[in-house]
Length: 280
Image (cartoon, rainbow, N blue to C red; front, top):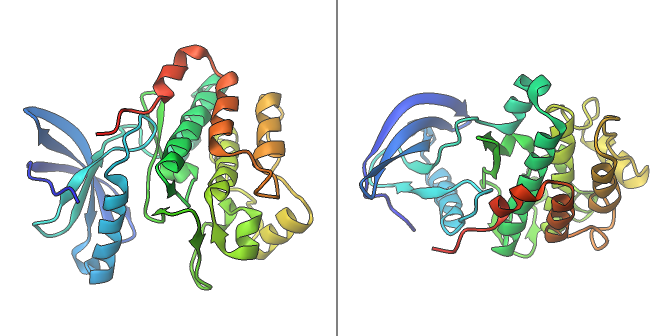
């Protein structure tokens, strides 16, 4: 586990999420000052269970180094409240960006967002991690670059067995998860398709008028798939609807193939951004 020895200076509070404050700050690292985001646990929430969850997320994030995955710097664990220090993405959450900047986002920019997400997910999968919560709200976007974030539900595993009462993001859940309560990489790929739909509908809520039982009924038994707007690129729609949203997870494209297919639809000048950083 990486414990921060360098001083972190907290700036303004950005947002409150459940048991955490997310705020901006500055990390003094190797004679330079790095702008960071700090996930700061509220004092009243600092139970042993919550601290263990936060440390588990930190351990999982520590080895991840990719341009399309949020970077983890360390844990400030010697003081209270407990803090995780991460890369700061000035643009903030993707879903907010899509809603507030919808008229200014070109089709090509949307395609590049999706390509970024595809390579980020593929990298995470190559590291043996199932994200389990792929959605626009859990992506950060700034300087025309999307980064996968929020690893609170993630695990390093081939399969995650969900408990009978365990909550999951039902609007992003693959059909087989409803049936088996098991989560594999292929379920992340399904959720990526929902994320692409969010990108092309300016952050709309999937299955907006339906609740969990209706979503399950329609995607499993009625083969319903979310409709894309008419202006979405046909090649992209075909990839998502016919390859990513395959009801059978064994027939669903894996994340690496999805990323390569996405790359064919995007200008080659962006390709070098998608390559992973060397492990360090």
